Image (cartoon, rainbow, N blue to C red; front, side, top):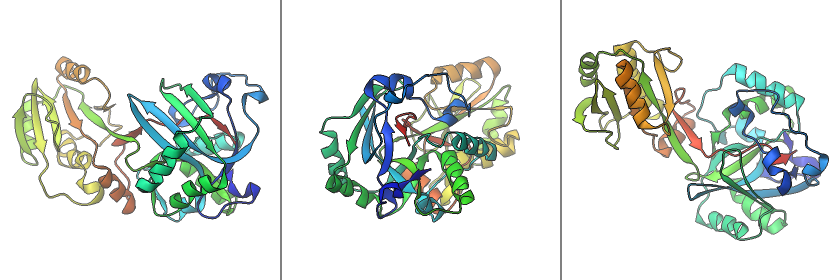
Length: 362
């Protein structure tokens, strides 16, 4: 946990924080993916870093840019009060796995200075974006190629008027967790154990609502699958249309027995989780027609949408399986899930790119 009050505190739920920043010449060795992206291994590959690898501790906020495929993803790095998560002003949309939370609690207890920022989404408008742009026009503190192969750039903001101009708007309204639900759950558990200290926070990168790319996971049913029977079952719950390939429209695309079909859901959808394509596919077809309970069923493979489509089609041709292509929901559908206090089905969506660990030491 961060402690925003360590140097006098700051009003509001989004605050500056005190940290050491990795020096430019050490970034390639010190910066890593998040711990939960490394399957919760408590020991990273051995890297001996001298104390001089990080700058002296400074109280500030930061602007953090990740550049991917010509697109800039720019957020503000700040401390966000844990009470904001507990009180519902920061809302999640994913269920967490207790064993992963347990492991992270242990990791953070052993390494209290570990700084692995959570990615949040905020609804601040154009005037706020202009303030961020003003910072980005300045000289960066850090610019390096991350472990993901992307360009990561960091600007420090410690001048009071400029920092306040970023923090005050971020302290208003509701934010949404994009990435880091397990990290939040682990920090909240430690906060509960400590008796809810008012100054406790979690390090976050706050992006605009459209500041990260929302992607989906596809479903592949391991063969053999009776294509005719599957299509007949689909026709009782969806409007099924034969196509020559993925449609690129709302609904689900199905590849089975060497043929493509589009499954249209219909105009009327329930609010929240019940109206999502991934839920409708599971409840209307995967469960009733194939007896598949969801991710974790040995007959179901789940693939992120960056996996080559040709490779997935080839696997279906080889074993007689079925492929369901799912598009990410509208961001508004995801925030509605969070506003309703619901959680997405497992392996539904993910945000990218992800911030890295090791840039800061708390």
